[in-house]
Structures are given as C-alpha cells and as structure tokens.
Image (cartoon, rainbow, N blue to C red; front, side, top):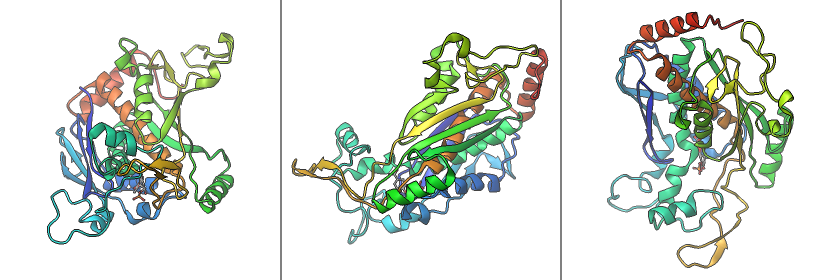
Length: 364
Ligand code: EPS
C-alpha cells in the first residue's frame, strides 16, 4: 500500500489537476485547511502580477463524500483564473475565429536557466511556450493541495510538518529579506534563497535501507529537487558534516533511545530514528528576468537577448510551503508503506501497535 500522485496542468491553461491514490477511507478533509495552505503559498513578498491574479482554492471531483475520503482515487482541481486572458493562446483545441491575445505569438528567445531551450530541443517544439507552460512553478499549487491531504493523514498520527524560510538572497533577518527583495526589484533582478522543513512526531522506522529506492533520505532529496528552481538539498547538518570528525558528527544515544543532538536530521541509513526530521532546500534566483541575459533567437540562429517578461522577484516564501507539502507527501507515503490499512482506523491501530512494540511515545 502506497500513495500515488499524478499532476497535470499548464501555467495559463484552464486548470491544474491532481489524482491522488492510496488515501485510506475515513480521513476527514477540511476545505478551509487545504485552501489556507494554497493561500500561504501565494502570500509571499516579491511575486509577480500573474501570481496575484490567481486566488487558488481546491475543488474535489472524486474520492470524497461529505468531507470523508472513500478510499478511492481523489481528484483535486485548482483552476487558473488567468486562463481567461489566454483563451486563444492556451486553447486545448485549435482556436476558431480570429486568434489574438496572449500567447498566440511564438516565443523564440529562450531564457538561460529556464526549461526553454532544453525543452524545445528535447520535444521538438517550435514555440518555447510549449515547454515553459508546463515547466512553470504554477503547478506547485496543486502539489500543495495534495500535500494538505498528506498533512491531514499525518496529523492523525501526531506528525506535524512545517516549512520556513531561512534566507532570501543571502539575507537572514525578515526585514533584511524584504529590503533585499526591494533592492533586487529596483534593479529589475531576481533572488533565490534557502528554506527548511521540520517534521516532528515521526516514529522511528519510516523508510528503509533495504534498497536505495526505499531510502527516505533519497526520496526526500528527489522530492525537493523535483520542485522548480531547487538546486541543492541538505539533510540535518548535511554539508557541514563533511568537515567534522566522526566524534563530532553523530548523535549519541541515551537511555530511552533518544539522542543528545540531531546532526543527522532525524534520518540514519535512510530510516527515521525518532528525532525531528530536518531538511533544507536551496533555490536559485528565478530565470525570468526583466534585465535579460544573452541568448539566441531560435527562429534565426542569431545572437539575441532572452525573452523579457513580467517576473516574480523572489518565490522563496512560496518554496517553503511547497517544500513542506513535498516532505509531507513523502512522509505520508512512507507511513502508508509501513502501516497499510484500507481505513484510517486500521492505519491508526497498526501505528499504535508498532509504537507499543518498540515502547515509543511521541514525547520521551
Ligand atoms: C512562473 C512565472 C510567473 C509566476 C508563476 C510561475 O508567471 P508569469 O510568467 O505568468 O508571470 O507568477 O507562478 C504562479 C502563477 C503561481 O501561482 O505560483 C514560472 O515561470 O515558474
């Protein structure tokens, strides 16, 4: 038993869609809680007018009845309000009549750092828009909706997951981060940053060292690297561990099987050890720039400046929410694999029996 997720949707298309499988029957979902996470993803300082145009809310088309999951595939939809401005440009069918408006003119100036060039080469597209629409981080919205389902499941086991921003453009303090965004925006530039996700209440034993595919550290790294613009992932003290001696790198075990420190970030050999799970992700500065970098016009082969478009200055606050959803999703998957159950009651009972066997309580 595991969780499955398939997401479809283009940035300016009609909607974003997620099919979620493997959620046990009887889990109560709260629309307000899912919508609150969608709003959190949108609230960050430094986003573009496009992002502000969207007012995301979840629709559930299947798998839920009267607020309770049925144990069948859940179909989640987040509509793109901006689509009404792209009816021709992003029409799924050949547009009839007089095609004009946004998105109808082919994009031929790939942005360094975006999917534009690798995308058109890989798929044989003539219009960069055929790549950029799907590569856009817009569809993180519906991943956050799926993550909210995962968080609801985890909460039944007293597991909480929270993402926070550590730095934006190198600035750590909140006021400095805002100032860094204002300065970058004034320079018509963009910023990246670092986020952290903390998960508390994980029992020891999620994930496995048996195969590399089951290692929870590998799965978390893949989930975080799967988010647009993420270029680095660290678990626990991560890169700093490489410079320490062994006696200062590991977490000594005390009676009661708790640890004196948490340098491993709650994961040893790809398995949770009962300490808080701690992961970080580094985001590169966004590649859509108002001050374009050198590129090539794909229609002529001549040197040119990359596409200039409205742009987010920074989306690091959104990344904190998206990374939280990604970590929650991977943890919920590991929970489903370990505890199984067709109904939530079966799952909770299996979890309780396991904690009893290993004599483990959430608080030492
Ligand atoms: C994005 C580019 C921007 C963002 C968008 C993701 O859109 P546009 O190019 O239309 O201005 O605003 O993010 C969202 C709309 C969102 O909801 O997060 C990109 O290229 O990834």
